[in-house]
Image 1 (cartoon, rainbow, N blue to C red):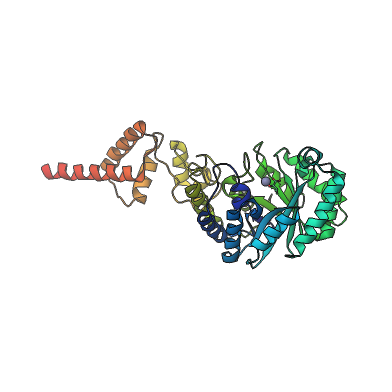
Image 2: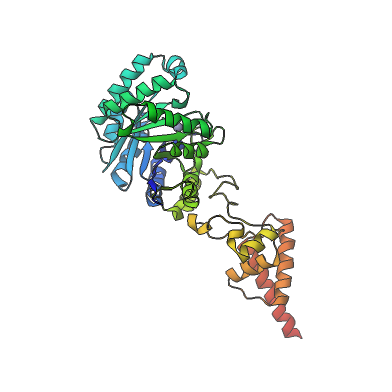
Length: 393
Ligand code: KIV
Ligand code: ZN
């Protein structure tokens, strides 16, 4: 089956970085940008240059050093923002200006205090100005999914006429369900007269825990760029998680026949680096990158996995760069203890295994799980005592 190309737009360094607890200094942003380049995304949103001098500087440094992905910078639809972003992106081999304005009546009336006509004028002016810096211009209609459909279609047509090449329609407040967002994009693509000239993009927030499902539903409706972040970080409940989007397409090619260029074996390493830099860990049961994502502790599960991993694993942990999967705890069986000992390089006879197994379970009763170091200590002690018992006899 031939697969459609799905473009991955990583906004960890912009939407992710702007959320509480996730701010990074310039060196940290560069470190993460290097790893995201190794991970292999199509577009890396490096920051929001008008937000601060530091942000502008970081975007400039990333644009100068990172060459594989397109480097994007965010700008509101106003002259100063676009100029700042255009200048910050100058060193980039391939630069994208990502300009946005809100389009829902709620945002226009209550936040921006401008009319729909003012909004349309700002779209034309902003996109036209951005095209003066680069041919690659993305336009986003903030709060698109709560905007009046006919007005939104006019906004999108206006942005395309002014030269936008990607149209992003965010579910800014994470309010949609998958069915709604699929119908939303189908309707937009049907009603917008020049829709065939651009790539449509989705940017879903996770306020109802639906960001990944919504993004995939949007893709089903013809969207070919997904905006997402490592570990799903971002404003409030976060954005769609990059690792979940990518692995859903890898694991379910029959349902999701889309191809990304992401090197999935770098997913865990990238997640870990983000955690190390921000000191914000992911929940233990977070899909793909959480501590327990591939952990099997229950005896029945461990036994199944040892016999055939497919009994409880729908993908190989190595596919996302995770190595060890069997966690020794009080529910572990003898099989799992034996296997972990073998993985650690120990060969045990039946008598030794009995004693090691009993000690592992006793220790697991006292502490939550038993680490490789604990296992090694136990085996060394058991083997030493067996040898000295034999010597004494
Ligand atoms: O959530 C949102 O609407 C955004 C836009 C600025 C793209 O982050
Ligand atoms: Zn956002």
